[in-house]
Length: 230
Image: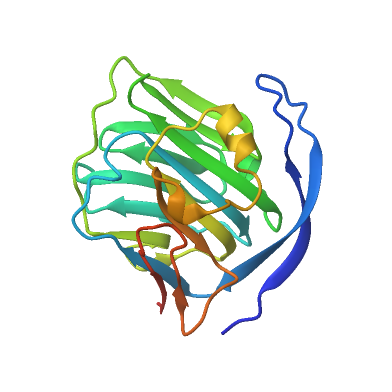
């Protein structure tokens, strides 16, 4: 098991809704460095990831892959895709599912060797897809219609696509089957208390708790993540 990386970072904790006036809060973040590895989470037969969705991830990129690879994704094909947050080189990034997508620039949003909180939101009710970086909306797109996603593979994959991996350190991954607002993002900056009681929390993995290549799911769903060598 690799040693956890401990770094002091700054998070935002005030409830300023439309402005970047968030109060700084210093806390320690631990992470697992993936080296030619990825992680899989078996989720079984579920519709938790078809509708409103928030993918909330604490990550430090060490390089940009020369090929498409997912930070976190659940898909088989372009049509059978429940969600995918993926990047290729420093210039191309996508938050997408099916034919619906939002582009972003990884170099601008995910600078190398820095802890970043990236929050990807899909609000089907309001036809909105957005990416927040450390609580600030950085890329968004409004649609006339956002259908629910088509069911795809029975697992979530982290830092990989077709076994092509990404060089990065991951601290936490949280998946909610609700569409977060800016206020929701600020309110969940710190460790989630009593995650097993959060009904809309589809999964919660803290990667400083890796034992025997397994990361427990702290939500009520018990969806353990397994780290795999490429």
